[in-house]
Amino acid sequence: MEMSLFEQMGGTYHQEDDYFLPDLSIPELPAIGIWGQRRRRYLKEHCQALYTALLLADKLNDHLSEIDKQAESMFFQLVKQMAKQEGATEQLKADSQMEWVGMMNNIRSVVMAIIDREVIYS
Image (cartoon, rainbow, N blue to C red; front, top):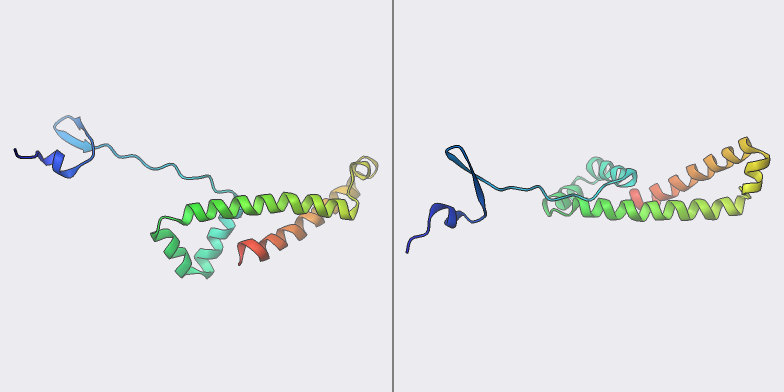
C-alpha cells in the first residue's frame, strides 16, 4: 500500500481553497522582564559566542527567563535587607517622606549595581 504525500510529510494540514497548508503553531515563550532584557543585550554585545550558542540550541529564552527570576528575587531581598540596615522604616516614611524616598532611591541604585555585577554581567 502506497502512502500519500501528506502521510509521508507528517504533521497535520488543513485545506484552504485548492491548497493544503500545514497546521503550524508558535511555541509560547516565557515572559522576559527587564533583567532578562539587560542580560540579552549584554550577551549580544559582549559575549556573541555564548549568545549564538544559546540561540542555536534554543535555550536563550530559558536562560533569560531564569536570569530574570534570579535577579528579581535578589533585587527585592537586597532592597529589603539594605532598607532595614539603613533605617528606611515606615516611621521615617511617615515623618520625612522626601528623606525616605532619597534613601530608597540610593538603596535601589546600589542593589542594581550589585545585580549587574553579580548576575547580568557575569
